[in-house]
Image 1: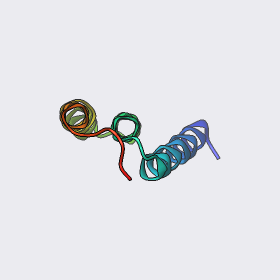
Image 2: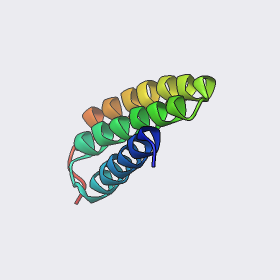
Image 3: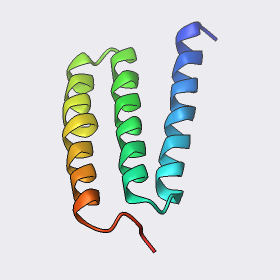
Length: 82
């Protein structure tokens, strides 16, 4: 196995952990931050796979824009999900 495969496997493992934690937490602001981490890790994975256009789009839309919208919505509503 090459170093690139090991990096991809590690990156995918951290993506799965961040996605699972985002689903498990009750605080909406924390879930939004974990979603942003997941999106930026996805963008990094796309860049490593050789798709810089998809990586740039994921970083802009998924990592930045959607996270900002989720965080602003969490501040406007109750932060806790019961």
